[in-house]
Length: 108
Length: 205
Image: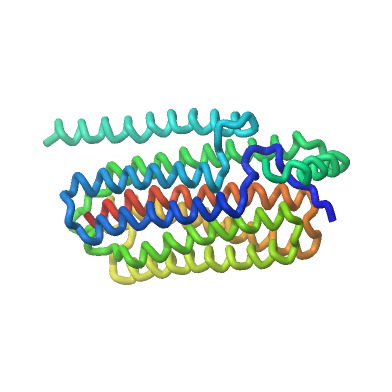
């Protein structure tokens, strides 16, 4: 029978292939930082860089393969809202860390 | 893109019931809610970034966190994200039985995650490492607990949806709700990436 599909929402299109690709990539991007920290062979700044880059790439993988955000017109408003939110988050998190660490430094 | 014919027919059928823009607007509205939720998590992450190393003579993350345990939690949530993706594929194909099976599997995986988190919190508090011990533990419990609360509400929503699919079938409103729950569920997995990276992995270093 023909069931109604929700296709014009910009966040529903997915295929078995896209979910499995996302899954495999996420597994790899989870294994890398855990392995880095658990083995502890690298210097701590290198491990830190590894954790952050794997985390950011995995977030992008989730957004693309699981939440289906891309540059298509259907997803445009979702992407715009997210970019605005990232700006606010950068102000919150970056500003807080900046001020508090600067304060900490000056109080020492 | 791959099911052009099927989706064209689907939308034509759909317009008889409800204007297609309604679903698009509901999806965008829910996305805006998720973005505001993201800001809540951003403030909690900022708090943790500032307070996360203030141990006040209490235990450090290195002494408390067990990475294999966190890895299992991570995998539970990741696999549940994929099984929910498969639920959405089953919704598109209109196979109600697989939607129900997929939702049940996703629910159990999510329940496993929440059970592990409750167990972790319980043993921390039982060993005297509760949120009142240090600024680090206060911000840790707030951040991770807020995520866990979200997952718990996601589970309640999922249980309701299992009931709705079983009773009402895959009607348009039910499909629309399943769609929004999928966004919520994937979003929580996204937040967890930040938590295991910043709280657990960096805490153990």
